[in-house]
Amino acid sequence: MWRSEGKRKAMTDHKKATSLELGNDSKGLTRRQFLTYVLGGTGAFMASTVMTPLLISSADPLHRSAGGSYAKTSWKVSDFDDKLPKHVTYLQHIDDGWNSQDKPNDVYVIKYQKKLMIMSHVCTHLGCHVKGSTHNGKSIAPEYSDGLKAGSVSYDPNIGPKSWFFCPCHGSHYDNYGVNTPNSPAPRPLDLYQYKVDSDGYVWVGPSFKRYDNNWEHNPNPEVD
Ligand code: FES
Image (cartoon, rainbow, N blue to C red; front, side, top):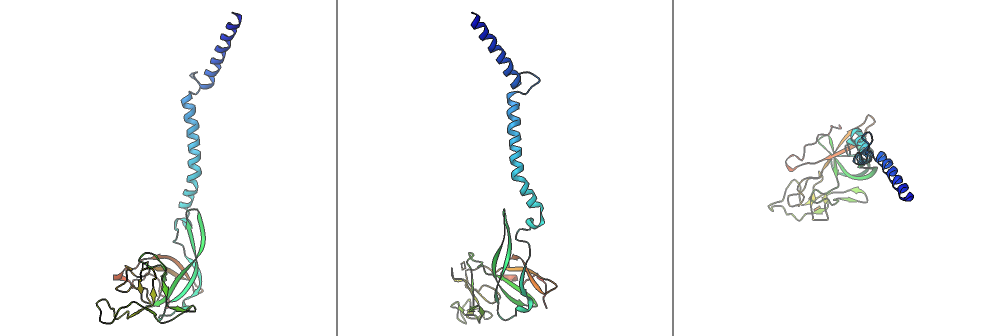
């Protein structure tokens, strides 16, 4: 008898204490409120951890213009002429999500109407790398025959029977200004890059842009001479 009364009293005391801890008392937290605060606080912490770098990244002009920045090259305008494209490389700065790095990029450069045409090496058909007519690193006359004969329906006398660029994947041909020949699967000329020239004469290369058949000569870049 004495034992069971003591046990009952101990259980009652424990219930009271538990009730106060978990907030069955009107002044404390209910179990639901407690869980809501804990989960809410954890969620807010995780969201701030993930979102803060993204917000900083999108607010920073250098990151916001991913692929839109200019890279200084070691070339000067005088390194190029209006006869044949020259194959050159520069370090392009890439901001891609968390990665920020300098990667070598191949381009071909020729002058046209007082401007440089800095042409991409990526075929506009499905993205393979085109080959230029070069020998031991030096540009040579167009060497790729696209099988067109003078007088055939798609023969273009301005392009001639040989092309300067060739894509080994599906046989696209481009002339020395990067314009696709009529029987190529490539739908448009090679993309161009924006550029600017600094006061010491060095060329800085910016983002690329597309050209289309009906405006392939359109080049928004500055004149260089
Ligand atoms: S990817 Fe160049 S011809 Fe298809």
